Length: 374
Image (cartoon, rainbow, N blue to C red; front, side):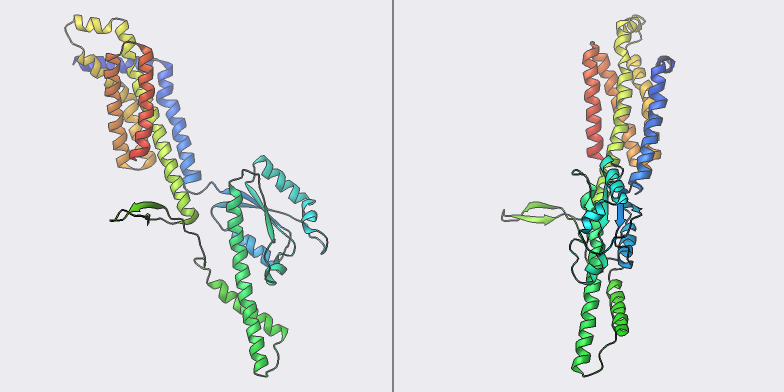
């Protein structure tokens, strides 16, 4: 009964202070909203990398490359309206004078775009002719993280078109050679065009649903053979490629969000139990002992009140956000241990400065344990 009375007074006194109410309601709500935004816009794939596209070729081939490039879920494409150029002269110099190019460069410079893909005039002719070098270039800041990704993704579409065209051209040449060796009439331009398109479609069909070439990232570590010689042992890989990297990054961010919640709750719990130091200075412990009640009820109530106010709500909130029972159970027991440790430390420590150092150590330990264990 004495324990319940002390516990009631502890909770009542905690809720009476305005800063405790802010710690209890406002900050967790803000943190939950931030976590929800992170889960919605990044972990679920909504945070696309902004990339601009400037098509100065304006042909069916360049439009096909842009359309396929835009289908990638990793990036968000913004197409710019460009002007046509007359053949001859320096195409790059003409492109750089275009208003669309100037605007795209400005947006890259201010960070609104991570990069810009510039498709040069003559893109289609170069692909048809078997010389795909220099058909596009990427505008990005020196430290842009999206430069390599945007260049590789668009280069994949250029390679797809080039390989299809090269294969179709070989088919047409072989058909012409076969007709010549058989002393048959030469192929007409219409027949060459139909044969090229048929071969192109056939080759292009091999890129769906998976491309002919892809990059798979696999982690390797040094392992020891029975004789002691080091060998490379491949660890089990996931989806590979950018998707695998994205999943790994998502896992790290999810762990980080969880660790921040745990650390925040541990701080609130330990900080609340630190009130015992001020209460002892005010003679609360002396009066309790004078009444012959002992210090156990005071210490137990001082540990239980912060856990009820901060620990249990945090465990419930994490259970809702993560939809993971194990994570909620871990949070429950971790915060219960933090409450008990904080109360015992506040009972033993007499200097507030030392207890603040204990609070900081508890928060840091909780962050490391959350990331490592989960």
